Length: 201
Image 1 (cartoon, one colour):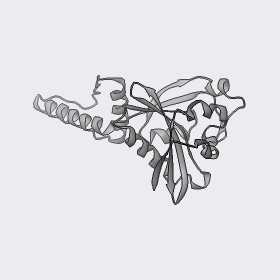
Image 2 (cartoon, rainbow, N blue to C red):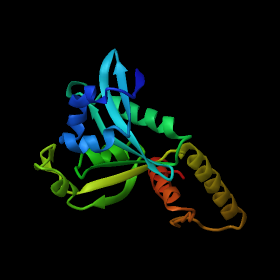
Image 3 (cartoon, rainbow, N blue to C red):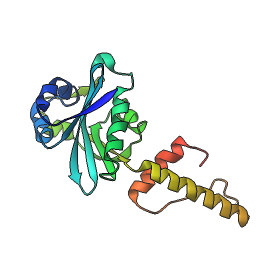
Image 4 (cartoon, rainbow, N blue to C red):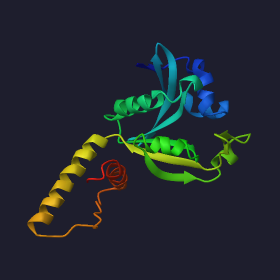
C-alpha cells in the first residue's frame, strides 16, 4: 500500500469525497485549505482530507473508501498513516461524524475517544436529509485521538508500575480502587482508551 499527498487538482477525487460528504459546497469549505491523502493498493482505494485547526489540533475529514473495497482495512491503515504523519506537527487529531452505531465504534476502535457533539448539525447545515446505514444523521459527533499516544502509553505504564510498587511497599489494598490521573483532558481520554485496551493496567 502507498499513501500519496495530493496538493493539486483535488476535485479529481470528488467521487470519493462525496461518499463521505454528500454536499459539494460543504466540501468546498475545507478542500482548498486541507491536505488530501490518497491510499493506493494497485489502484485508488481510500482518501481523506486533513485541515489545520490551530493550537496543535488537526481535523480529519471526508474519510472514504470505495464500497467494493470496504471492510478490508484500508480506512484504518489510512487513519494510522495520517496520525503518524502528524505526530510531530501537532498533539490531537479530531474527526467529526454522524452519530450512528457503526461509524462511531469504528473510530473508537481506531484509537479515538468521544469529545463532544453539535446537536442538529446535519439538519441545519445540509440542504437534504442525510442517511447512513439507514439512520438519519442529526447530531455531529466529534472524537479525538492523541497524536502522541505511544508516549502517553509509556507514561501510563510507568505510572501504573510505580503505583503498584508503592502499594506493595506500603501494604495497600488497591483492589477495586480507581486511579484518577489529573494531567489534562487529552491524557484522561487516552487513559480511558488504553485501560479499555489493556485491562491489566
